[in-house]
Amino acid sequence: MRNAIGQNFFKILTSLVALSLITGCAPIAGSPTTPLDISSSEGVLPTPENEQYKDSLPLSLIPDLHSVDQSDEDHHIFTRHFEVASLSSVGEAQRALIESKRVEFDRNNIQDVSAGSGISGELNIRSYLSAVSTHIIGIKTITYEFAGASGGNSFITQWFDTSNNTMHSSRDLFAGEEQWDDFREYVALAATKNPEVIAEDLVNMSNELLDSVNFDAQGNATIDFDDYSIAPGSAGSLTVTVPSQNVVPLLSPLGVLARNAAMSPAPRSLISSVAPLLETLQSTESPASVSPPLPAKTERVDCSKAKCVALTFDDGPGPKTGKLLDDLKKANAPATFFVVGPNAKNRPEILKRMIAEGHEVGNHTWNHRSLPSLNSAKIRSEIDRTNEAIAAAIGEPASLLRPPYGAHDSITDRLAQAPVILWDVDTLDWKYRNADKVVAETISQTRPGSIVLMHDIHASTVAAVPRILSQLKAKGYTFVTVSELLGKENLKSGETYSRAPSTGKGSAKNGGKK
Ligand code: NI
Image 1 (spheres, rainbow, N blue to C red):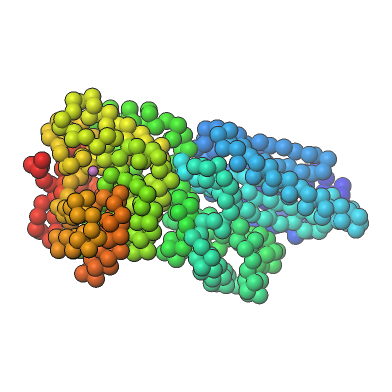
Image 2: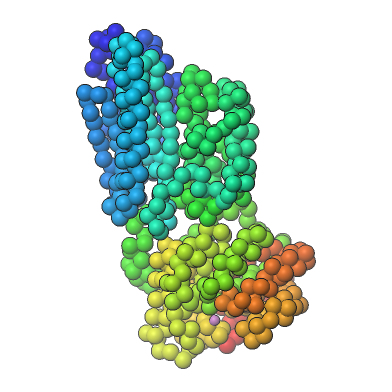
C-alpha cells in the first residue's frame, strides 16, 4: 500500500486540498484506496509552489511581509507561515500555531503508526491574507492533516491590531458576551440550512468551532468549519455565511476595522508614507477627488428625503470624548469631529475608534488660530501638520476643514484644499457651559439639513448630548456625518458649506460668511 501511494502522494493530496479550497466543498480523499482521478484537471491545479487560495489577498499589500516555507520531508511536514518585520506579533503567533499543530500531529501520527496502519501521515499548513489595512491584518491559516485512514482541513484566523502589535481571536471582533452569543445563534441558524450539517453538533457550538471568522467583499461574515466538526467528512470543508445586516450591529471597533479591511483592502504601507501622501494631495488640483472612503455601513441615508442633521464637535478629542462616543453609539448616531492637531496626536486611539464606529474626522488646524491673520506658509502648516497627525492615527488625512472661529477668506479657502465646513446652529456651548441650555439651544435652532456646532472638550456639552439625541430623534431626525449630509459627490474643495439644502429651502453653499 505504501508503495502504491509512492512519492507523488503528497503532491496528489496537496492538489486535492487546493481543489477543495477552490471549489469550497469538494470531498477530500477519504482513504488512500479511494481512486484518485485528477488527470482531467491536471495542469490547471495549483502546485504547492504556486498555489493561490481563492480568497487570498496579494501579499504585496504588506511590503515587509515574508512568506516562510519550511519542510521536513522525512516526517511529511510542509508549512508556510508569515512574518512581518514591523509587526513582531505576526511571526510569534504564526510560529506558535505551527508548533502546536506539529505537536498534535506527532502525537496522532505516532499513535497511528504504532496502531499498525503502516501509513505515515502528512501535515500541510498554509497561511493566507484575508484582510489588510493600516489598522488591522487578518491571516487565515489552513491545516491539512492526513493521519491514519483519513484527512481533513482545519481553519483558524488570527487578527492583528497594528496599533499595539497584538494578536486577537475571532471572538474579539464582537463587542461583548451578548453580541457573541447572538452571533453564534445566527451561525447555527445559517448552518442548519445546509442539509449535510448535523444539527446536534450545532447545539453545543463551542467557541473553538468559531475560530475562523472572516468577511467577504459584501461585508457578510464567513465562518470556516473544520472538516468533521459539524458535518460528515464527505461534506468537505463548509463555510457558513451570516448576512451583513445581522453581523454589523454585533461588532466591536476591532471587528468594524476587520470588516472594512476585508471589504476594501488597503496597503499596509500607507502609514509609513504619510508625508508623500500629503505631498501628493498638495500637488493635486482637486483633493476632494481623492478623499478616503466612508466606513462601511449597512444602509445609506438619502438626506434629500430623510430629515437629516449633522452634529459636529470641535477642538477635541478631550477627556470626555470617550463618554460621548459611548452615547453616540448607544443612539446609533454618526457625528463629525473637527479635531485640533495636538489632541489628535495625543489621542490616536480615540480617532481610530471614531472611524471604527462610523464617525467622520475633520481638520480644525494645529494652533487654533484665526487663519486670515496668518501668511500662506503658516496657513498651510496649520492644516498639513494636523492632517499628518490625523493620518498617523487613522491612515488617511481629513477630507474636510473647519477653520477656527469659522474665520476664512478667499486665500484661506484656496489653501484649505478641502471643503470648508461652517454651521447654521451655534449652540454657544463654550459660553454657557450648561447642559440644559445646550439642549434647549440645539432643539430650538435645528432644522432639517442643519449642521450643529458643539465642542466635545466641555463636560457640560457631553452631558447634554444624550438628551439632544433622544429629543431630535423624537422629532424624526436622522443623524449623519457632514459628508453624508452634504453628499460627498457635491462637495468641492475651497467651497464653504453651512447647512444642506432641505426640501428646496436654504442653500448648500454659503460663500460670504466670515
Ligand atoms: Ni474651535
